[in-house]
Structure formats: C-alpha cells, structure tokens
Amino acid sequence: MSNRLILQARNSVMSDQELAAIGENALKEREALLRKHPQLESFQKEIERMLFGAGSVENRMTVLALMMESKLIELQKHLMQLSNITSKMAVS
Image (cartoon, rainbow, N blue to C red; front, side, top):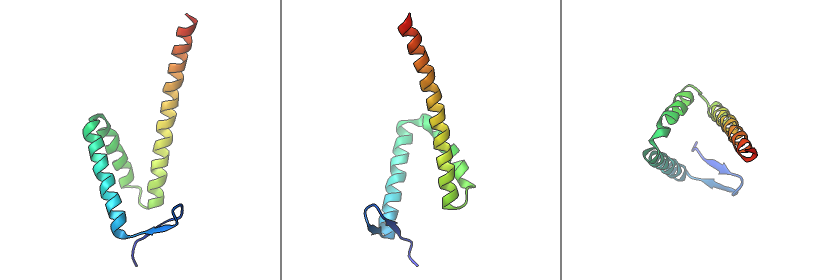
C-alpha cells in the first residue's frame, strides 16, 4: 500500500515522490533559516528532542501545538509589558 496524502482543500492526491520533494525542500529551508539565524538552533534542538519521544503523528502534532501555544503565551506576556511601558511613556 502506497503512502499518499489526500489534500481535501485542493481536492487532489500527492504521490510519494511529490511528498518527498516537499519534505526535502522544507528541510533545506529550515537549514537555511538556521544558518541565517543561529540563535534559533537551541529552539530547534528542543523541538527535535520533544518530538523524538512523541511516537505517533497525532502525538507529534499535539506536541507542536502545545509548543506553539506556549510561545504565543510568552509573546503575549512580552507584548503586554511593552504596552505598559509605552502607556507610561505616553503619560509622562
């Protein structure tokens, strides 16, 4: 049985070769991003470490969703701090 991904939004089926090409391209883009922004390497290693033990695709997606949610909460906290600073500066 061939591994195929059905893209319902585009109502099409991708071949194994097409999926492999997309995966290879994504890895190249990731490596280029890490070369351009080496400060992200520790975060990438954290992602890989957490995904290593996740097991199934569903678990891996859950781990990624939780990591994204955590980073969004962190970003929101920083934005609120900046907002407070700018509010104080506007009053002065």
